[in-house]
Image (tube, rainbow, N blue to C red; front, top):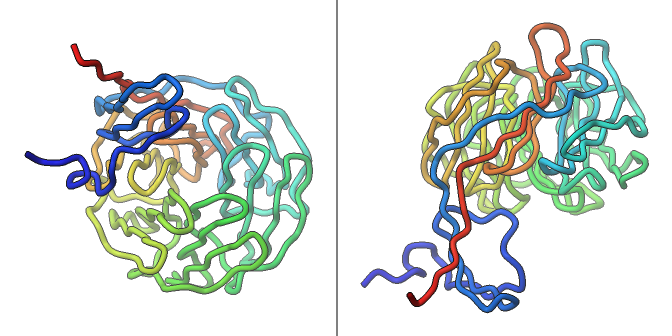
Length: 312
């Protein structure tokens, strides 16, 4: 008989509350409700219209979740504007310390985020505490259009462009950036998802479909996207990611299950140079172009359910 650990690589966990972002086939024991539960992703889903941003733009950065997101920087007219999303509407809050676009961002929610890099090629890094942005220690390599993963205290920046595509990867520990092992292939305008010890980088300028997996030490090439693209809205983690939009305005959406990418329902508005946040079951896509700078926000909700096992 096949055992759960042989399939998933871990024993069934005991937790006090259900995981916020379970993966397909994950099983856990909830000590509060005293029940064994599992998660099933039906491989379907749809996009719904969310509240428009106050400032339409593209080449912006994003962070957070579907109901607690942050949008910052970008251009149509280069801006430092920052906005918070509460699951219904966007509210303007305090600006970045400098206008920037083609930068990268990550963060757990709208109260804690990190911005780094950007155009013109810069190493600048800024930390968001829920109220203000503060300049902190720079990247080691100034560049734009990096892939990003992680949170404001533990981030990963990879690839990008500085007079040509680069392979450099750097990890952030809340204070400093440290150079670590490079990507296998130099690229920019990738999607990024996950943490600074378990990340996914996918796509890239020129319309590549390449996907690379970071295990905290090295990058490994894994299965490609079905549709090569760049400048998309990424979301999720290294074993459960979402790629939406991209190229010169596509609406295509793909979901990653840790092994393969699967095409799902299209965005309502085809676009690229947009930002993303959230998970592969509850994602957010906002901004982008064409035409001009879009304020459009869309919410992704996957077809999935949490199942409680019984002895019946």
